[in-house]
Length: 475
Image (cartoon, rainbow, N blue to C red; front, side, top):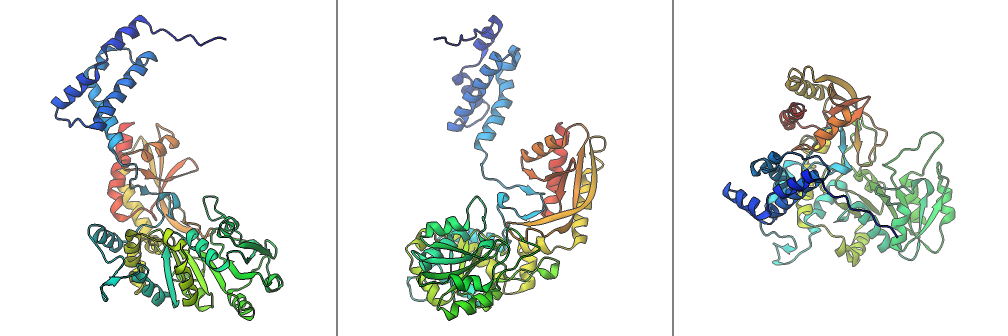
């Protein structure tokens, strides 16, 4: 058996290793400089000294002067800042994807943030009925609003739409069969698929039709004594075009009524408003689905609705009461912060124009092209002259995306600021902006770094310009 021979450091390296300050010496010096010496400071000092040791052994550190306490101070500050900075932070979204799953999906309106701060900073009536002085239900705080906005008889809210679908299937179809069109067996993100959710609920999947075409007779032919539910899944995360068809909801409702069966529609990214007047493709609103006769409807709170992450369940009172009684409901319930944010967002929908103006998701989707161009001009003016010789700055007509699994083929005309660096690659620029003090996330197209003005707020233009100038000032 052979073993690796450990490389012996050179005499020069050994001499430098002995010059590395002791931990206590460095900590004492930092304390003299006014630093509070806590747990993170001690770890940061050890990491800096370990870094010096590794650099000497690798031949990257060769001068004694680099081991002075004043010189190591900057390394300590960088390391301490990195250790104590929060992992969860805000970013500037220049991707043009409005409902960006990886960047937190919908931005909440000011009214929602104020409500979250109000109930989070003190006690609240989360499960206390102020009229009776007795225990109340957290669902009642938004149920009436949801019903008024959609026409549903009853509703409740859980922590996300996948949970909503799971809870409904577990309540209505556990141990029995659920009929679904083969073309609607979608994967809803993160490798979670409708068949998998159904299996976990205890229901048995019955696929009908072909991938591209399903007819009413397919559903009718599959109904047996074991059938518990007809399920319609809105394919909001993909589109099928060409020779394809699916059964309209009213026809499914009529068929189900003849067999005394409920119909459930999983809307995914449900919207309370018809956004087609802004050039977006026509999608069924939640109210339209309820009016068409669906017995239960589920959709997300943090997509087209523009609220916090939540799964909203609406439908006939008898069915919703059964779902509320399911023991899983408690495990999937929302907390006070989600409830506060959701109520504030829902109240904005009482006036459609107010909702469009104040809910950031809706405002970004409906913003006029002229305003996007004006934002691009503002940003360009702030950086173009200063970056002359180091980066070419232009304005580019391009397209944004809705995101969040909604309207996958929908292009939203927009204006982006395009950066073409002279002395570094566009990939290096992307990394520098992404790793900055305030991360800036954009997209690369045709060797240009694009900042799409659809998802950059007016208040972010000045700090965004400063961040760009800061990056180029350091390279």
